[in-house]
Image (cartoon, rainbow, N blue to C red; front, side):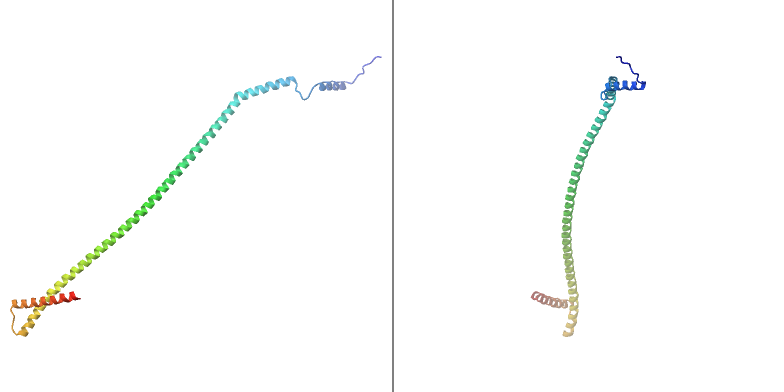
Length: 195
C-alpha cells in the first residue's frame, strides 16, 4: 500500500512549519544573539557610566557632604558665637546694673552730704546774723546811752540851776552827771541781774 502524498495547500503548509519552529522556541529565554548584543550593550553602558557618570556622581555627593559638613560647622560656630555674645551681653547688663546702683548710691551720699552742708551753712549764717544783730543792738544801746547821758547831763544842769539857783561850772556839772549816770547804770545792772 502506497501512500500517496496528499497535497496540502501552501498556506497550510507554512503554518505547520511555523508552528513547529514556534514550538521549539522558548519565549522566556532570549535568543543567543540577543543575549550577546544585550550583554555587550550593558557592559558598554556600564563602562561609560563607571568612567564618566559615577565619578561625577561621587564628586557631587562628596561636594554635597562637604557642604553639609561646612554648614554644620558654621552652625556650630554661629551657635558658639551667639552663646559668647549672649554671655557678654549678660555680663554687660550685670555691670550696667552694678554701675547704676553705684551711681544711685553716690547720688544718695552726695544729696545727704549737700543737705548736711546746707544745714551747717544755714546754721552758720543764722549764728552770724544773730551775732551781727546782737552787735548792732549793743552798738545802738551804747549810742543811745551816750545820747541819753548827754541829754541827762543837760537836763540835770538845767534842773540843778533852777533848784540851786546858780550856775554850775562845767567841771562840777560833768562830775555830777557822771556820778548820776553811774548810779543809774548800777541800778539798771542790778535790775537786769535780778530779773
